[in-house]
Image 1: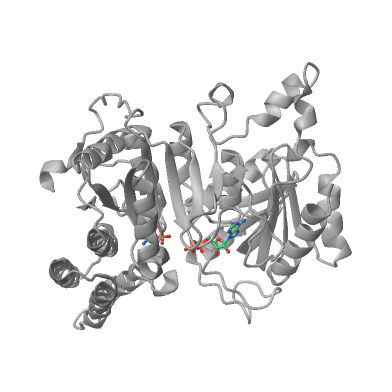
Image 2: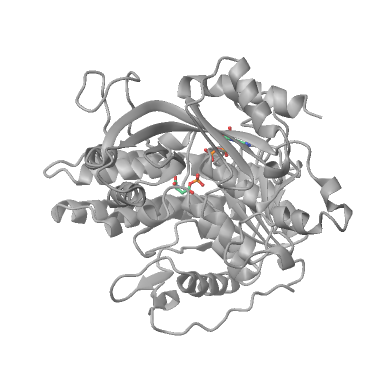
Length: 533
Ligand SMILES: Nc1ncnc2c1ncn2[C@@H]1O[C@H](COP(=O)(O)OP(=O)(O)O)[C@@H](O)[C@H]1O
Ligand SMILES: N[C@@H](CC(=O)OP(=O)(O)O)C(=O)O
């Protein structure tokens, strides 16, 4: 694909790209997650077949997962990369064999036409042979660099798309494989994921789509050598962002994220049986829900798409007739171009409240309740050797040094409580401190930060916590809502460690013990969503 590669020079000026808005039927970009490709390839085919009747369709796929993401291809590939770090062994071979066998078996199960199956099998063998070569070279160099790790995981999306193209062609849908692994080429020194980089990339993605003519482009959600590496810079779930950039590039009418859930609910439907599906949410609400635990969509996805004024629809591959949940861009005149995900409604209502009836249309209840688990609270009590402003500055520069970001904060002049997410800080007991019995923190960043913070005051760590958040536009103007939220938790004997309201206009959050998370979610949902009039 070298001819299609994008050469990114930070100095070069970018020609503004005009999206194609007026193609017959308009473009719809459909993103399918790994479990959907693994478990429901024929549903995907049906969805694409139905889509092409009215629109131009481009699809973006993630690496296959048979059941759960944990046992999915990307995780297997990451395990193979770890094995390649060990000299003198070839423990990655059986992992590559499992990936190969899995793709061959699903080809046999889903592709009927002999020559399509035969060329699919050849393509799988070629990708797996190339994967083995990358693992061998990394092992030889005694290092799996960020670049090598990205190249290794790229095989997951390549194999998934080769599979989906074969399945679509087998059903008579003209489809074309689009490998985005080399769509970006970085030259020279340090780069970052700037707006200019995205503008250049989206234009290039549109060219890749146009090159497919009338065929349905089937695009690898892995999109190449991005600044800082895809795993490092964007993280897992990067295919949502890829689909967003494709949608922006082609000027799509809609971006559809297909999952195994009907859309965004008033609470996690797997934990709260009475949760109801939301027809629409605002970009600000979707961003807040995603950040505070309802990870229905990758956090980076929204900004680009909403800036380009493209609606995002979350839909269910197992239930395609359901309309799902749509995230509509806010009216153009109300959006702050510097912060397109900020909820503009609060300001509209405030300024208009005397003059017209907008206040009357205020929602009466919050939009959703969400839980973020694996939270650790750090309390720092100042030793008063620094003045108050110096105290906070020292705390934040320590966190910055250790690459820790705070989800929630509450502070006074001499005391600060911060809630942080830490996946590897699985801790036993709530009272053990660093070095004490029962302390099982494996999070080096967290431990390093605690050691440094101790220079500024007394530090204590409260592990095994969760953040419960109420999210909804106009929440700040909903008189009495905080009282009811905290009251319901209190009545049910759920202790509140920390409270935050006001940092965002649309979120009230508090920190509770993680073991209470499901109960809290249900009592809040029952009292504030089911019965609140
Ligand atoms: N408010 C919410 N609405 C919908 N799903 C939610 C919400 N909060 C959490 N979830 C969870 O997000 C997950 C997203 O859907 P799914 O496609 O099944 O998972 P994944 O992205 O892991 O493949 C589901 O497991 C669902 O339980
Ligand atoms: N396969 C990648 C990318 C991705 O986006 O996956 P999914 O769409 O299944 O969440 C991962 O596991 O991170």
